[in-house]
Image (cartoon, rainbow, N blue to C red; front, top):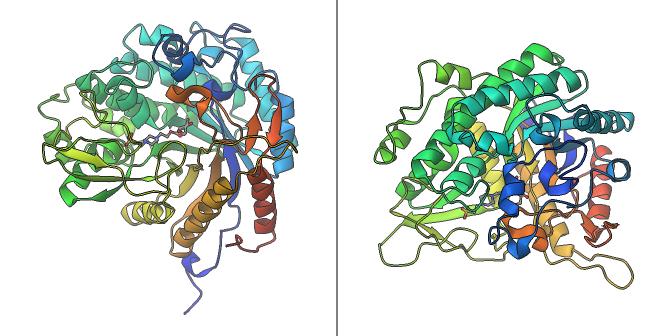
Amino acid sequence: MASSGKGDSMGFPEGFLWGAATAAYQIEGAAQEDGRAPSIWDTFSRTPGKVLNGDTGDVATDHYHRRQEDVAMIAELGLDAYRFSISWSRVLPDGKINQKGVDFYSRLVDELLEHGIAPVVTLYHWDLPQALEDEGGWTARGTARRFADYAERIGRVLGDRVHTWTTLNEPWCSAFLGYAAGVHAPGRTEPAGALAAAHHLNLAHGLAVRALRGVVSPSARHSVTLNFHHLRGDAEAVRKVDAVANRVFLDPMLGKGYPADLLEDTAAVTDWGFVHDGDLDLIAAPIDVLGVNYYSPTLVRRWDGVSPREHADGHRQGAASPFVGCDDVEFVLQPGPYTAMNWPIDANGMEELLLRLHRDHPDTPLMVTENGAAFDDAVDGDGRVRDERRIAYLRDHIAAVERAVEAGADVRGYFAWSLLDNFEWAYGYSKRFGLVHVDYATGERTWKDSAHWYRDTIAARRRGSRVPR
Ligand code: GBH
């Protein structure tokens, strides 16, 4: 075969970024220090019954005080890039810049750069300032403007040093887990509100990309991270869930507007009157790379009206479903093995998803911004964490990314979720996704076997060899 296209070359392309990811509320702690104001996750986690064991992010991994230690660890891992998020209510607690909050991120960026690590910044990983929720949160159009204003101000401060800007992390979770299912902050169960939230998140993204381009370095890349539901099952059920989980964000962001079938499927819930003239042009601000988070596939079929409807993670689907307009769809738990989240382990889904995105949007480069697994890890008497299942998970998923690359997908990087064990949202500290173990009583960090494996794998990759299979 002639060696022309990038699909012919084996392995990952030059400049491929190996990284790990975190998010502000999940790791920082210091919830009431240096002028930080509360976000919806502070409110939600302090509301009894919302988070397992009443856990909160008040201390988390104490990263706010261990920043330098953590950067040293990132450097020792040999990462090319580190993906973290900025706490909006830390840097703009009352609409004005909080210098102490900004300094924290500015130092983090400088320290990363001193070690040759590219900062990949997410502006919004679910922690809306509570003051904005009090004005309607994402159901209010004004929140999109406020977000663009926040993006612009942070862009002015960090814009000369950040490698990649990501507006939103997984707006599906913000809109549908937060405002329809109510299992994430702010815990509202308003199907029409969730669709309005989805639109305002789309608008926030587009406005922010435009605002950032005006103030940051022209060489910076702009992106958004979506959690694609990689769907399998009956064609009609797949189409419906795909519309309200994937295309509701992807299509307008990539300039195709809202899918006609989505508008039809949700017509009984809303008339989409919150979409104003000109919004679709604003949402379609061009991006340079699309962030893809993948953990597991989702199996769906037409609901027979009798059997219980289950979520892919094993939760029974009650009255408050995140899948608005999908009342006749059943979520089937596909056969295991499963992670500690009860999510099926299925690396082929990663390859299929990347290839589908590449086929549907061939001009949009992709980056795997999260992939990883929770297992019940424990530190052994000899100080080791033998997490061989996590190693197998990462190895198989990296191999799947590689197959997608070899088949022609334009994938620019891979970020393991997560650098550290951390606050796993509604599951509190009960689920451990880290490459590095955290003892929550002391804050002590211990490299799991997977951290050593990931370091060695990255190092081997850079010498051009392949993932050991
Ligand atoms: C990511 O969310 C987050 O970005 C990150 O902060 C988090 O810690 C990490 O993953 C691990 O959870 O809704 O029943 O169909 C991933 C969220 C999980 C949402 C799987 C969709 C499918 C199950 N996704 N979920 S269901």
